[in-house]
Image (cartoon, rainbow, N blue to C red; front, side):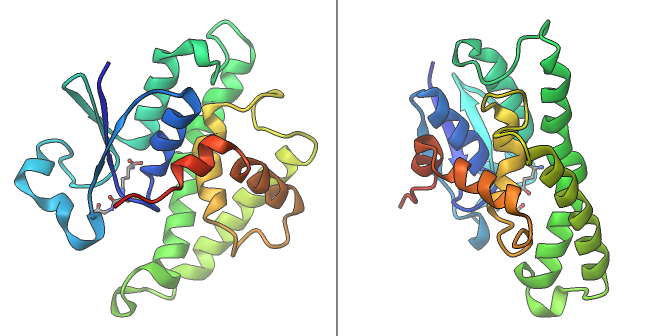
Length: 203
Ligand SMILES: N[C@@H](CCC(=O)N[C@@H](CS)C(=O)NCC(=O)O)C(=O)O
C-alpha cells in the first residue's frame, strides 16, 4: 500500500500523521505551505476542493477530512487495536469522542483562537471571543471530569479518539491552565514516541 499525506505542520494534518506513526505504517509526506497559498493551485484543488490540509492518497485514491481519514485508517488496520471492535460495548464511547472533537469541541476552539490571535488583526471580531471561550470552557470541564480518574478517553487504552480530541488539547495550553487532569493528559500524549515523531517538522 502506498500512502501519501498532504501535510502542513501545526495543522489538523497532525492527526493522520500521528495515527500513521502510531500504526508504524510507511508513508510519504507531501509538504504544502498552506498558509502561503500553496493549497490553491489547480492541481492541489483536484485533491482537496477547499485547498486545505490534510488530504491523503492511498494507492491513487484520495480522501480529505482529518476525522474521516483517521476513522477510516483505524478500521482499515484493526490489528493496531486503536479502536474497540464493533461488537465491543466501548465502541459507542469511541464513536462519541471521535465525533465530539470536530462536532462540539472544534467550533468554539476555532472561534476563540481565530479571533483572539490567528486571524490578521483587522479581520478579528472581538465580540465573538467571550462566547467562544465560554463554550470552550464548558467543553474543557466535560473533558476534565472524564479524564480525572483515567488515562485515556475510551476504557484503559489509547485509541484514535485520543488523537482526535488530544490534538486540540495540545494546542490549548493557554486555556487549560486550571485543568490539572487535562494538563496531565496532554503530557501523557506528548510523551508518546509516535506523537513526538509526528511533531518533527519537515522541509
Ligand atoms: N474539517 C477539515 C478542516 C481542514 C482545514 O481547515 N485545515 C486547515 C489547517 S488546520 C487549512 O488547511 N487551512 C487553510 C485553508 O483552508 O486554506 C479537517 O478536519 O480536515
